[in-house]
Amino acid sequence: MADGTPPLEADIRRRISIGGPMPISQYMSICLCDPQHGYYMTRDPFGEAGDFITAPEITQMFGELLGLWAAAVWRQMGSPENLRLIELGPGRGTMMSDALRAAKVMPEFHRAIVAHLVEVSPALRQMQRQTLESTGVPMLWHEKLEEVPDGPTIILANEFFDALPVHQAVKQDDGWHERVVTVDKNGNFSLGAAPAPMSHFEKILPPQVRNAPLGSIFEWRTDSIALEIGRRLVHSGGAALIIDYGHTQSEVGDTVQAVGEHAYANPLVAPGLVDLTAHVDFQSLAQAAESIGARIHGPLQQGEFLRRLGIDSRAAALKKSSPQKSGEIDAAALRLTGSGARKMGVLFKALGIADPKLGALPGFET
Image 1 (cartoon, rainbow, N blue to C red):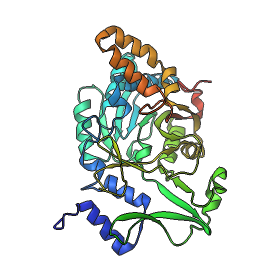
Image 2: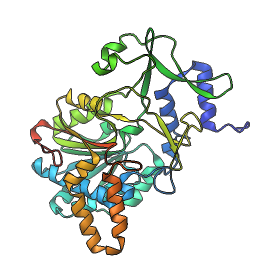
Image 3: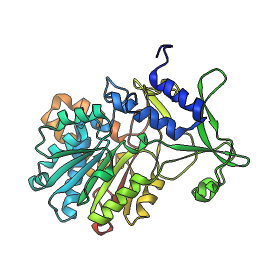
Image 4: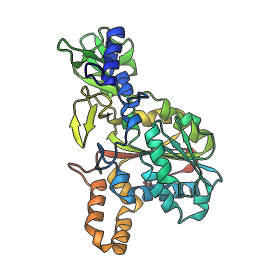
């Protein structure tokens, strides 16, 4: 821009000047997925050189365990041919690569797979192609889950739902008002509330949220993807594994955050240049899939789930084959399963969604 304003910021200012304050969900959607300047559309955000690190980038054990989980579920399904192994938001393709390598221990499973990658980012699609070109598995890319043909299905989604735009409402004297992004008197983006309350909103709130004190903030996402997952699994058979950070019960709180260069940032500064996410409401996600007939498993804390899948045994095997890397392997396992700062074992949860005919899923057995 001639005045030095980044293009995406200028576009959001223009939209607000024409249409008035925009809901946070719309702001997030533009920041992340604008075709030209959106955060995910233009860059590789992963790894030490990016803005954040996900579990598959920390250690190969994560993807390997998920690949073995998928193989066990496939057996439960009756070992169907032409299995649609779907990953939502595959990042660099690292997790799928590790999962497919582990799947080779069951050759008949590996041969049955057609991989379907749901990815909107052209930059990341290219990276995924490079990562996965030598797997020996057919690969197809889609912009939406709905584009994947029906049929026996296993879905993997790691840190996918947290990046979906979230709506927010704030409780005021006369009801709940949607939170919006506006421009303040100093010319900066700021948060405000739509002037009119949302009619009938209180009736659809979870019971534990309805009596929240004034000033409370409630977040929600649309249920369309969870409903599609449930429909697909009930209709065609299969299971989904969703791993993300969030809360097991619907609750109030502002969890929208921005991350850039491995540090927290202001979500309203540098749109399109930092990652925007919000915690996943696992209760809402589960209820949406359950409403269409799917069976819910969990959620479990990620640390507990990975231990049940055998991460300790896998770490021991890796240390035996590469003793010089023992410290690195132990540190990676602890980061995935431990609690406290920079550890993912408690904040992250694992949720299974399945065709009710399957019974207990691996790792979720009681």
